[in-house]
Length: 184
Image (cartoon, rainbow, N blue to C red; front, side):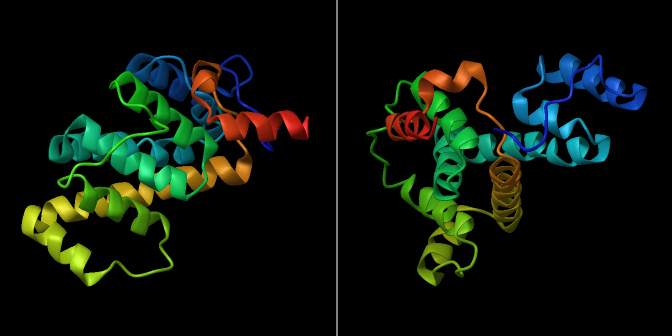
């Protein structure tokens, strides 16, 4: 159960209602995470900077590469909500989230995702050299900054225990479904 409730439009103060309207206009109905973040307009605005970086990452890596990158970060951080979101994205791309192969071109970016999520460790110099061969410094800044926002998103969801959105429930890993059933 989430530690912080999801704010509804009707229960929100006027300045938060404006943020709700903006969110609805730009991205549709607020997800569980966004409805939680909307308790604070500045917090919501900060986390929504994920989207411009996501667009940059997709330009650099293509959609599949971007999804694999974000999935690597989210699964390493054990963020059920975000990893489930990216499991759905993999499925939508025709890729099994439980059994997929990473191409030689995708390997360094997935390794960067794992390294970014395990931020207590420096990135292996060999990995960094591979990334420098392929990406400009601007690109690397975007990739690492995106990883930071992805980790922050994972942290928020994990600490607050934001519930997985209903639309994502079919994509929750089987092991997680079994654990949840055991707890209840």
